[in-house]
Amino acid sequence: CVTPTHFDLCHGFLTQIRGRKRVLLVPPEHTRSMYRADPSGVNPNSSPVDLALFVTGLERFSAEKRFSAEKKRADAERARFPKTRVALGEIREVTLWPGDTLYIPPFWWHHVVTLETLERDSDVFTESISREKRAEREKNDVSDEDDVSVSLLLAFDPVGDESVHPCVDEEG
Image (cartoon, rainbow, N blue to C red; front, top):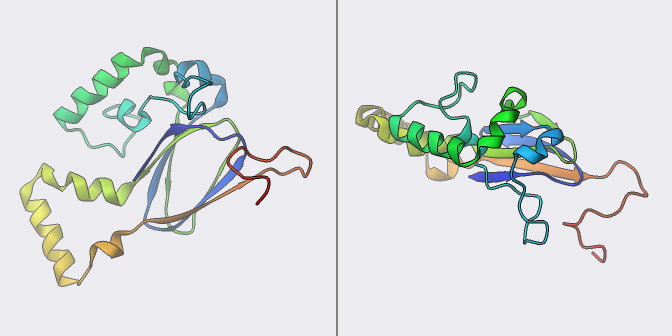
């Protein structure tokens, strides 16, 4: 599961309950580097930049595996969005494990990837690893349902007189 690059207008706590998530965060002062979507569009707080792909193969971001096809896609993403390079030194990478909670301040860009899904999908990099994982899953009677990642996002405004978050219906 991937949550594309975006920012929220309110504060948020992202708590991981089951599985793991990789979160890439960019401070709001880099908004000009993030190619913000058209303000009159459907999701004006989003960016077309795939941050996970953008940092693929860069030494600092260790969670990415280095496959040549993936590196070519990453190089293309970096060429497509050259201004995002300005933010590279300030991109923060966090891996959430069960029990971890991450505070995401308003206006911070973030991109979230469920890691188990990526690992399962990337088993194609060697057939033997894929066979081993499948055999271990069968031996331990693990179903696809056991791979479900569960997290909770609590969005909030800390001051009572702040306006209602645009994602929340004022009536309900």
